[in-house]
Length: 371
Image (cartoon, rainbow, N blue to C red):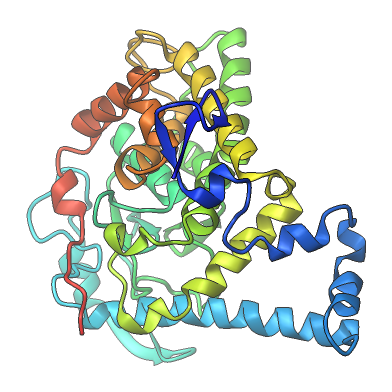
């Protein structure tokens, strides 16, 4: 085990996995063999690098089958949650000030089967449904974007219902991406589009207290969080750590565990095409810690990132990303930075949790692993 200091291995006090400190990810075959090749030549390069000089069409077919297997595994994961003891399927068992009082209506409104065996629902008029992935063990969601959306809804006092098993989804498509929202059968996907839709639907203006400079800062830091820090989190969790900590932070049905290597490979390849995956792991970690330094300077001693009085979308997004580092990545250099030099970021996470997630513990799923 090496250590990390100011982004450089070998001299500091923050431990790094050996493969990170040595700039070698667990599945480094991808990066090592395709370095210097343009993305346009990737398929041909794979074909000519494998034994027997495979046909590029066969490579495309293999990638397609791999992707289908990952999607199938995730769908199966969602379907097995109905059988998992202790899983509340997103419905509140106790009165909750944030959730809409529509649980009984939703349960009674199931009608005949439609589409692919789903029950079509006559959802109560005006109720916002947040469709997202299952609850985590240490955070309400281990995916940053659903956590961002749910925090946004709570921050602006919008009542909502959670759907994590598809029973409140009238759309027959099984390949919709989490998270998305539905109101009166009107579906909106992509978190940025969801925020825009919610603001228009409920006449919200999160930026009304911001001047032009603050609006520019918010846009710049939203881009930093969603297009750089997000990838640093994904790479560390799925590639550098090889998803070894996943079972500690998320309930996993046994049948789902077999699909994890495919997910790791998919994340690694997606990061490669994004560009950040072409960097050495230690360099990625260094860049993300520099991002945390910038976030820390912007926050300073303020309650929120842009003011002491009015939270914005930036606070929701920052909380969703930083919460992953703070509560689900305790062995990472990101956590060490947040609890050390940039402790105001950890304090920010605790403030948002206390203010908008008083039911945090009730939103976790600590179902034991089934044999």
